[in-house]
Image 1 (cartoon, rainbow, N blue to C red):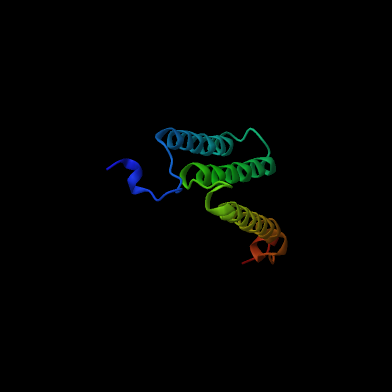
Image 2 (spheres, rainbow, N blue to C red):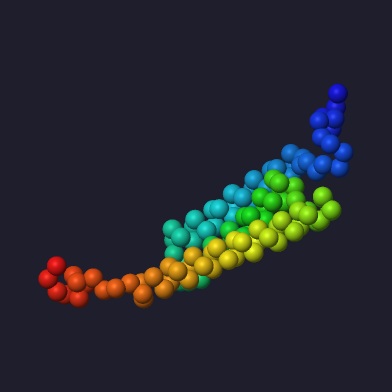
Length: 118
């Protein structure tokens, strides 16, 4: 019984080479944002944008190299799943950043912050 007998016909599966490439890209896409946060070579805003970009790249690497999603498999439904995932991630990240940015502005001042007696 061959290795391919365990997979249904047309079901994509990766090779060791694909998994090594995916793992290597994942390590690099994790190490660079970690370095950006620890060393702070850029402004906070630019660092945040770059980290979000690396997060999206990380999602794409996982979907392509580990989940084996591409435009050809399953009649293109995996590409629709990719687009849906990216839209949900964009909405979630944008909403979270918007809330955090405006949180400080919309908070009521605390008495001790105004120099008053608690």
